[in-house]
Length: 448
Image (cartoon, rainbow, N blue to C red; front, side, top):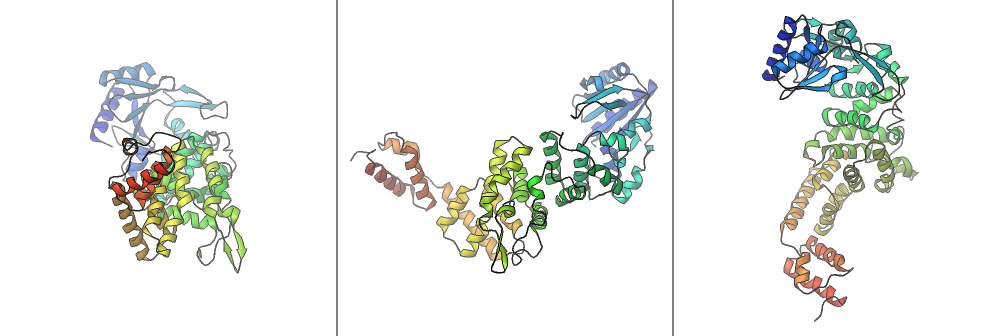
């Protein structure tokens, strides 16, 4: 945590102590300090004071913002601090907001920690003395790298905790305790909103070094089918033994996701890139056939698009993100094929032009085929440089056609498309304009 946030936390704790209260660091900031990793989000819980007392203290130190006043949660403007009071929660419905919440300043550290999800997140540290409060064996579990739920009853009240267990396991390299796996396997995830599910999925894909652990953990909990239906169908799905000695489509997909981590910062849209790595072979579940002694999945990149779209629409309404993923999945086989065939510049230019993110397309192809001939990578990189060079050159634009006398018509877009094809073929602007005008003249949209 920054020195500025720490100094303010100490100031709050001192004022609280003067009024008979005690302030504790809680949750992830304590966990991560013990793991010696940075955590920019600082959570403080103040015990022994009434809300009006805490609000007065915070207002004396800065601009107090009530984030959830009825829940006893506050911020100070300009600081990355969440200041909360101990509270009781009682579930009254299936939604994540369906809880009756009441502030209880005198609940005690054990009662407050009991409502947390995992023992490693139930640790508390006295802000002034540094004393560690560990009611549920969180330090022991942290040392062993184990995620263990605190309380059967409170844990089961929020089904999102199933996904949190999986993403924590992936991000921190932890294993989930057997009793927690058993509890998670009995929980119903259907009531979750897609926004909350997507939030946990994104953390696993963007923050974990091995995103596969997220999915393998959900598999162990038997919790893939509700939100990750199409992915679950890759379990046991066969693929070419010659090209994929690693096994079924699930195993291959998990390996690709983990390798994609090495490239995710190079993609224009890291979320979309990682989702494409996850979805790129879904089509193999519907188009794979056995013939001539091996399994074949001809056209799986196209067959998988409806499955990918269904999967994504279950999780998000972001049209641009869905389009990005579908585009990468549709094209993911082309780079390696073109490199193997020594395709023409015109062909590789068309491929890159069809890609919403050419860089991400090459990265996905690399993650999909590890250990490929370095000459393949050189070929594709050289061709991408050629494409970018062509795109940087002057080109025929609509104003050029209008200036030459081409009247706007329903065929105008077709002329621009023709001019663009000339550009991809490396034809200089002047010659491309001549050829495009000749086409317009032939169609009767240009005199002379």
